[in-house]
Length: 511
Image (cartoon, rainbow, N blue to C red):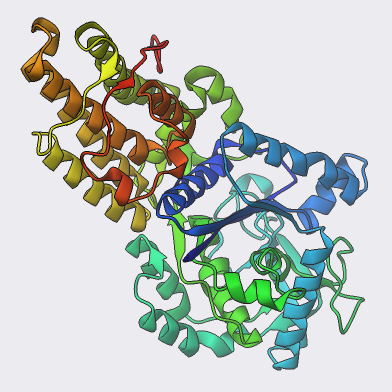
C-alpha cells in the first residue's frame, strides 16, 4: 500500500482559530480524504506553534505562564477542527517531548555540518511574522508618527522593531545553487505554478543568512551546544513535520513516512517553507518534501484577516448559517486554490443555495421521491450503457486529475457537472409523468447510479452529507470506505435497495 503524508502549517496559539486557518485545514483535509479513497495509507498532520516571542508576549499580557497559556489555547484548535469534520491523524504541539527531540537532532546535524555559526546581527524584525525584513521589503513609515518608525511590515502594516544581539545564524547563502538544482530536478514541486515562480524568484534574488537563536527569549527549545540560546521560531516550528514522522526517536517510523508528500501552506510563508526549509533539510542530510501546495488568503474588504484589524471571521459562527458541509464546500469550491478569495456572507449563502440546495439537494430529493412513487421505493438497476454513463466517466476522470493537481474547485466543478447532467436527464425524460414500467426504471436506475458516483466524488468535500445520501440510496457501509477507481465505475448499483427521502439536506437560506 502506498502512503501519503500531508501537513498543514501549525497555528500560533496567540489567537483563536479563524476562517483563514480553517481554509488551509479544510483544503488539506479534503485532499487527504481523496487519497484515502485511492486506498493509500494516509497520515494527515496539523497542530499548534507554541514557542516564540509573540506567544511569550501574549502570555505575559494575560498574566500567565507561557505553558499554561498555550495549554488553554491549543485545545481550541483541536476542538474547532473536530467541529469542522477535519480527519487529522495527528495533532502536534511544539511543547511536546517528541518535538524537542526532533528540533535538537536537526539543529545538531546542521551545526555539525558547519552551516550554523555564531554572529552579531542588527535588523528590522516583525514580531507577528517572526521574521526580519530589509529596508526594500518594508512599507514606508506613517508620517503621523513623526518619522520615528523604522518602517512597516508588508504583511501586517504595523511598525517593525529594531533588534540587535549575538545570535547563531544558518548560512542560507550557501544553498542558492543547490536549491535551484533541486527545483529544476523536481518540476511541479510547488503548486500552483505561479507560486513556484515566486519561490524561485526569492532564491535567484540572493539568499541571506538567518538567525536561528535568541538570547533575549526564554520560551523555546535551547540549542544543544549552547543552552544560553533559545531556538529561533523557524528552526523550531518547521521541524514539527519531522517530529510527527518519528525523526529523532524512531528511525523505522521516520523512514516509512518521510519525505512528506505535501505541505499545505499560505502564500505568506512561502519563503520559510520553500526556501529556508529545504535548505535546512539539505544541510542535515534529509530529503526535502516532495511538494508544496500554496494557498492564497481569504480576504475581508480586501484585507487579510487579522486580530489587529478586527476583521476576523470565526468558522464556527458560519457553521450556524450554512452548516459544516456548507462551509467546507464554500471554501473548496469558491476560490481556485492558490488565488486570494473575497469572503462575504452573501457569497457563502449564494453558493450554498445554488450548488447545494438547488443542485445536489434537489437531485437527491427528486430521485428519492420519484423512486418512491414509481418504483415502490426500490432503486432500479442502471442500464449497461445509459446516457449518463459517459458523463459519469468524464466526471470521474476530471475530478481525479483535479484532486491530484490539488485543485479542489475543479474537482468539485467536475462533480457538479455530473449533478447537472443528471438533473437535465430527469427533466428531459420526466419520469414523474409516466406510468411505472421498464422505461421509467431505466431513467431512474441511471439517475440513482449517477447519484451514487456523485456521492463518492463529493465525499472529500461533504463527508457527513455524502454519508447521509449513501444511506438514503440504501447502500451499506461507509462511503469513505469506497475506492477509486473501482467503486466509481458505472454499473455498481445493485438495484432493489430501499431508497428513502428524508428531510431536506440543504434547506434554502433567505439571502
